[in-house]
Every structure is written in structure tokens, then in C-alpha cells.
Length: 94
Image (cartoon, helix red, strand yellow):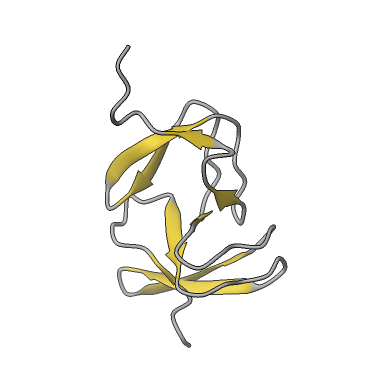
């Protein structure tokens, strides 16, 4: 199995894809030594994130074991995770 997405930390709820993948592609990735897969619900461009589990609105987007932002809507496994459905909390001055 060729790795198609990267998950760095077992806490992550997103994976980063290593190529462009069209909707309906089944992506394979590892969490530790265990292989997992998720079907792309949308086109996912190279280097972008895909949800590997449901992320509810207001929940953290976890990459590298750390929160990199907050979901602005519920994100289903297989959906593209980007600025259209998340916002960063870094650099925000409230």
C-alpha cells in the first residue's frame, strides 16, 4: 500500500494528502502501525488537509497533535479541511 496521506500524531483528526486526489478516491494512511482509509467526499489538492473523523462545529482541528484552528461547521470524514470550514486561532487579537 502506498501512503497517500500523512498523519503525524495519533491525536490528529486530519491527514495531509501527498498528491492531488479527486472526489470518490479512497485514501490510505497510517496512524502508528495501523493502516486506515477514508473516501474523499471532495477533490483534495496536494498538501491540503482531509478530515479522518467527524469534527463538530467549534471543535479543534488537530494536526501534529496540536490545535491549528476551529471548525466553523461540522466536517465529515473525507471532507476537505481548509479556510472555508475552519478558522485559525493563531494571530487573532480579541
